[in-house]
Amino acid sequence: MKSLLAQIKQYKAAFILAPVFTGGEVLMEVLIPFITALLIDRGIEAGNIRQVYLYGGLMLLMAFFSLVFGVLAGRYAAKASSGLACNLRDGIYEKVQQFAFSNIDKYSTAGLVTRMTTDVTNVQNACQMILRIAVRAPLMLVCSLIMCFLISPKLSSIFFAAILVLAAALIFIMSRTTRVFRQVFRRYDDLNASVQENISAVRVVKAFVREEHENSKFRKAAENLCRLFVKAESTLALNSPVMMLVVYGCILAISWFGARFIVAGSLSTGNLTSLFSYVMSVLMSLMMLSMIFVMITMSTASGQRIAEVLNETPDMSDPDHPEMQIADGSIDFNQVDFSYKHGGSGEKTLSHIDLHIRSGETIGIIGGTGSGKSSLVSLISRLYDADSGSVCVGGKDVRSYDTKVLRSQVAAVLQKNVLFSGTILDNLRWGKEDATEEECAEACRLACADEFIERFPDGYHTWIEQGGSNVSGGQKQRLCIARALLKKPKILILDDSTSAVDTATDAKIRDAFARKIPGTTKLIVAQRISSVQDADRILVLDGGTVNGFDTHENLLKTNRIYREIYEAQTRGGGDFDQPAPEGKDGVPA
Ligand SMILES: Nc1ncnc2c1ncn2[C@@H]1O[C@H](COP(=O)(O)OP(=O)(O)OP(=O)(O)O)[C@@H](O)[C@H]1O
Ligand SMILES: [Mg+2]
Image 1 (cartoon, rainbow, N blue to C red):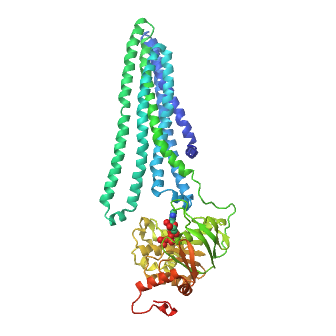
Image 2 (spheres, helix red, strand yellow; image 1 turned 30 degrees about the horizontal axis):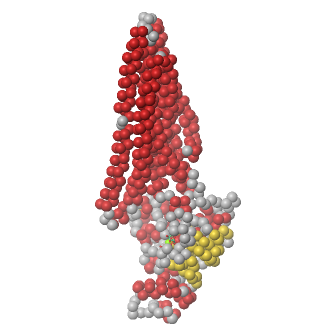
Image 3 (cartoon, protein in one colour; image 1 turned 90 degrees about the horizontal axis):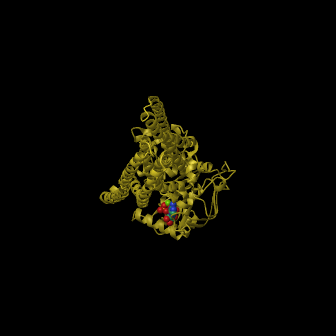
């Protein structure tokens, strides 16, 4: 609640003005029936036309003010609640941008999107309602009750009976609906998650011909939601007949007793008329109060979910006096252990990693799936922090650098990479905002992306759809490499970034790297031996530990895992009747 209120910020004035104007509006509305009574008793009954004009004019004036206050209150309530919603969305968005990868692992994408849309809308609606009604209803209730007791304490006791009946009915209705509404919003989340997942992965759904299955799954979820809503709303619908019953009961009782009092001379006609207005006000405000409680229960769950994100502390922060300069491209892992905090098995993903890489070296990294290759390289650009030990770049701990500086000098082409909607140039300029077209073309030449870009009719201005869905897997990978190259980094990490590129192009890219950016430290994670065998040294990872770290030739002699991968790949891909070129090293081809 506190963290939500903190987001009011610049809309504080609106938050105060809305209830103030509502108060004014209620005051006018409460006084009008009172003046009506005076008009009837002193003007009409007494036959005094001057009094009629006086009180009539006063009533008109009050009606006018009530109208103006009402409009202003509505305006400020809308401004306050939409402003709060805007700030909340902004707050969540900003928070997510600050998140470290480990924070992102904790929330699902769908969860975050639902929080920014449905949940914020719930809070916004509740806020608007509360600003308008939460002030209005109790104020109206109290004022009207006071007025009633002022007019006739005896008749007003009828209210007590009415209020008791109404309260009992409301408690019953509310306890039932809140329970159902809680379920509704939980289901709502599931529904949103499923929509998110299915729409973003609609190609996979189609590829597996799962449309029917997904359709029926969704229909079931939607029907479930519908059923719950009907249940909640049909209970809520009881509100209105109960209300009518009580209202008419009160009016009947007041008419009956009121008539007797008038005959007995203890009540005037005017007072009876205004009493009727107050009866309506009292009962209306009770109804409104009940609605607010429902509204609050509906939005509490949403509010909590929003606060959860807002209160999340990013797992990573920059030091107070960060290093702004990276000396060179050397990398050191000093006895590093690492495990994923969320969603992982709890076991160590990497253990006892001790590596020392010189600036400008080309390092190949190979190992089975799940052996920890991606995890290892993610520590270098500090996407995650090591549990123990230290990772150093340019001789200094990565945690001592300004994250921006570090990530601009350590360019990582992630395994799960994406392009964004925009032109090819827009996407490339993620690497360097002010890159000229010539610089972009140069990076693309290095990444062997120029050949296919130039074949597009619009060249570098070709529009890329969301997620890069209109370029092939290999084309996408080459664009991602070019994007990283534009940073002119000291360290370049390619995490399985040429897996979809044909072997010849792959070799061409590596060759270009060796010639054009010799000073850059290059880490090439790959599944193909051919992608790493020319590297200065090759790291063999197995189950999160270093199994070997040496040149291709030495590993073939000494490392069983490397030799097995090599044999499997050359046997499958090579010619049967010719020994592989490395066969002369004494290794069976
Ligand atoms: N974000 C994550 N949250 C939790 N566990 C993870 C996460 N990413 C990876 N893991 C786990 O960490 C282990 C190592 O994964 P990693 O991605 O480093 O392997 P990899 O060697 O890169 O595999 P591949 O060759 O398939 O890319 C795996 O067991 C995986 O299940
Ligand atoms: Mg990987």
